[in-house]
Length: 123
Image (cartoon, rainbow, N blue to C red):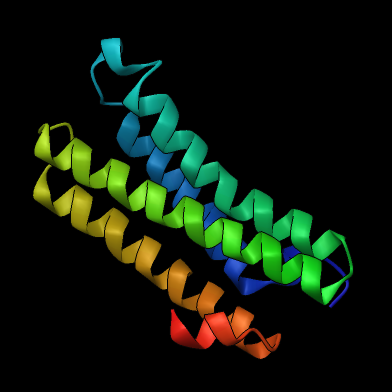
């Protein structure tokens, strides 16, 4: 693999970012620097950490960045749940985002496992 762009998980994570940006456009304007910003930052952190880790060309470093991406995934899922509870997202939108996040999370875990990370198997 020559680039993070070759990774299917990076591509899926980028798609998730686009979904998050589209859904958060409808959040109340007073959330621009609150939940909107936090949700978008968590989402963008996922593919950014995948890219940064892969670019380091070191499996231990890559695994560390993948674990950070998983942490950002959990943060994103929490923000989506908060938005649903505040009725910023309807049930269907929240479900769609959480399903996409779950798919990326499973791919991250699989990649970790393939890189010899025992934590990837446990997650």
